[in-house]
Length: 116
Image (cartoon, rainbow, N blue to C red; front, side):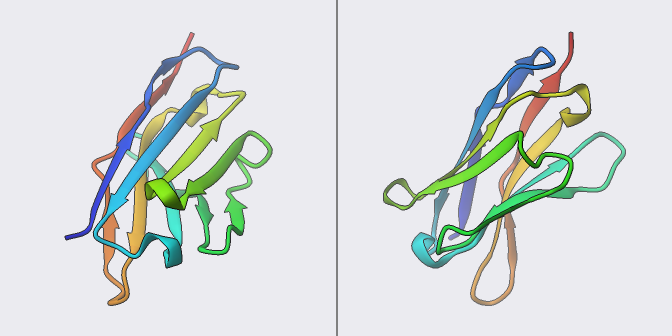
């Protein structure tokens, strides 16, 4: 029943900004920690940021001070505001959660391409 749908990716020039969204269903969203991951071609998926049910956040060092994760419990949605984008940020960005049975659920991803 769990479904995650990402949106907001696209092509942006270095230094530009994008805002990603992930809409969740099939979970008690308000008590669920939500994660953003990304995966560049030929590389392993890496954690970008997460936000807890209480609103606590954490970021990978590579995106700290540039990206901001947030949540809107009324909309069952998390966001990733990405500023000062760099070519090395190019990747497919995925939304993720783990349910009460410790099973991972992933969205299909949204592609972010940072290029001049």
